Length: 240
Image 1 (spheres, rainbow, N blue to C red):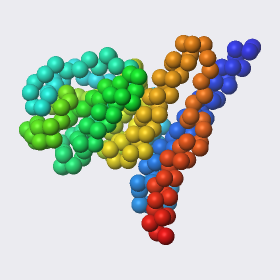
Image 2: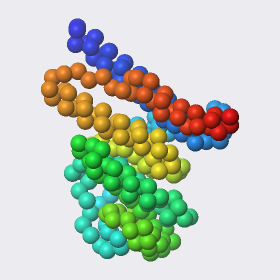
Image 3: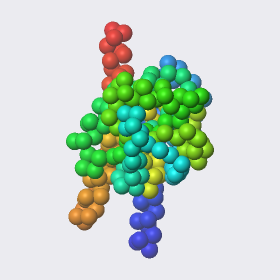
């Protein structure tokens, strides 16, 4: 009976934490939108987040990898507990959309920010012979990281990613299930959420092994209220 009650409490707590996380992510995105009053826009964001949370990402075997334009061995997709998947097609300005300089900073920060560094998985789908442009972009920005080239767009076919490029970046767990969706290069607050989720899970895992209890900061609105109001405060100061 006690176990049943605890199980119900745990499920309810998880639901509350997830709902809070959805609200936080919506707020983060809305801070970067000019028409946040549009309820339809908020509803669309919430729909994407809830649809993808917990969904397993599937990977094709019909891929090859390149490092600075040279063929190389692909990274082991099962080696890391946490992965950050970035999907990019070559429609439009690849270098503009990809923001390689910012990703390089995130990768460098990850070397010291986490106990278990996440793997950054860049998937490029070169359309209309865009592979050459991708290679040139990688070399131009001296992006020293292995990337996947998906000529047949198998990764998209298996997963049907959202059309909005802001939702084509995913934080994954060891089972390739989505923990959070959002592009941190378009909004630094998303990167803060990525880091917080990984760190909390690391602390939770360590604490559980030691037989202790862990309280998530996702259950404490103060921390995120601070994050979400920083930009608002700067905007008010500018207006004043």
